Length: 133
Image 1: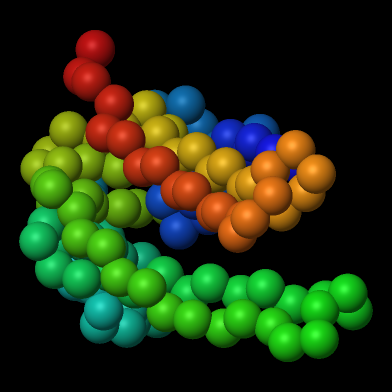
Image 2: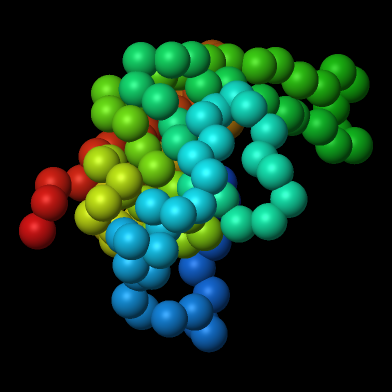
């Protein structure tokens, strides 16, 4: 049984129908504090930096009434390029901003053990850098 979902990672983008279509100016964002992962952001507005080459933790949870034992694991991956985040906006240089889903594509494929796919299940997360347009 294979389930495929196109996801946008909530930490990368939280799109809302009411939000403006133009990113904040680079000048305005340059005045905000830059918080580098894994540091905790201050109260108030900020730019969040996911640094290239540094481990970024992801927590994997599996739970529910059908499971006798759940899963709670941490895995780490690192980015090839820095990513700066401000609300739904993302940038690789902190100057040129676009909606995060235009910079990074995320796809989650979940295959559960079944008659068609006997053996271990698989959760496959693909994170692709989208080409500049």
